[in-house]
Image (cartoon, rainbow, N blue to C red; front, side, top):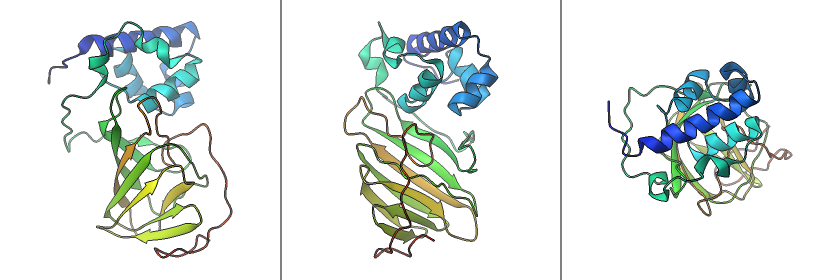
Length: 224
């Protein structure tokens, strides 16, 4: 097992999450259903055996009616920035976005002082999300395999394997699989500052917006 250079941080945060959950009388299963994170992940988190991104902690704290700042009281700031993190192909645990079947996992960044997060996304065939989101920061999506339509503002862009798109995340956006098979995407997200987590169309968000069908842009066909 790889040594964690900041074990006290994971243990402290996990203990505080566990205490808040128990104070509300919630089981791990109930918390899992409310914050859309796996029960096994939450269990490891509470035992100090897993790290959570700021975005995940915001989801957990929203479900627990708990101020996220309380999780970090007394912790040293240098432990809240990723120093070195290796992700293996064997790390296959993917979170599932409820009602869509979309799957994702963080493969880099996401700690309090990190400037970006990197995600591996899996888009199932014939599934889509209805909501657009807008948030501070920028993001880049690179299609590893399959075909994906990225809808940004009033345009849509059809991307295939090897294509990518870089956007200002404040523009309303979402994405969907438009091919005949599962699509795989690597996404890099940067926040406008280190205090704002970047929720997106594939990860549960508290504030989303609905938009009408889009006109076609230079990158692809209009959404139907």
